[in-house]
Amino acid sequence: MFFVASKFGEIIPPQHQPQHTVRDAIADLLPVPLLPKQNTQEWHPDWVKGEYAKYLEKIFPNLGIVTNIETGFAATTHTPEVIQQFINTPPGAREAKSKSKKLQWDGFCVTLRAGSGNRTALRPLHPEQPRVISVREAARLHSYPDWFNFSEAILHAQREIGNSVPPLLAYAVGMQVREHLESNTTSQIKHQNWQNLHIS
Image (cartoon, rainbow, N blue to C red; front, side):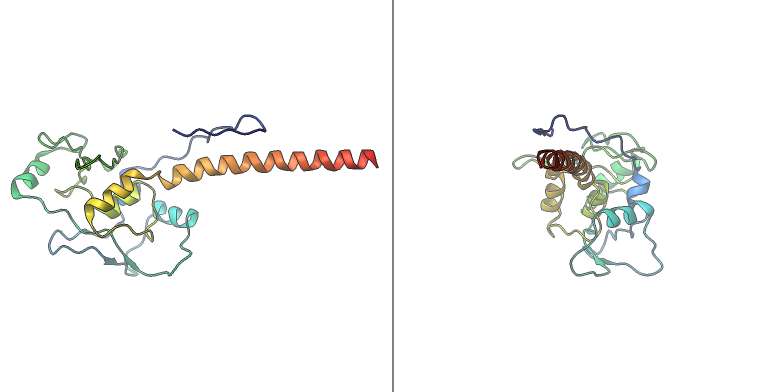
């Protein structure tokens, strides 16, 4: 929830934004190697980023050191029994034991939560692979550009993402506030100039 107030009057809430499916967000990512556990991946010319990833990097450009190494690809280790349970769970359904929802390629992601205290929040299951989503997949679903890095520890990284405001949401709210301020301060300056001209 956002509370925003202005002495200039009502700030119009952000208008409806385009929606992006799970496929839009993560289908173009490099495969996550289940073994060995590897956190980084290198983008090769053969791998082309999707329109959603390009859009995020256009809105949130990397102003630091540009590299083709990306982080957040380490897979969470699951027991054979858990893997089988994930395999048996159809897309869109919740896994019977953990209650984690299996994402659908052409659906939308559930809310990514941080958890509380020592309790780890449920992470969604990948639409095809028998595992929970990786940090990079969670970051994409939360609208972070690929250059943004998180903690190397999977649990901490997932908590960082779950605790954060999605960048595209923050951008939408921020742009509305900016537009409101610019339009009202411009009007105020014009009015002040007109008064000065009238007095002189």
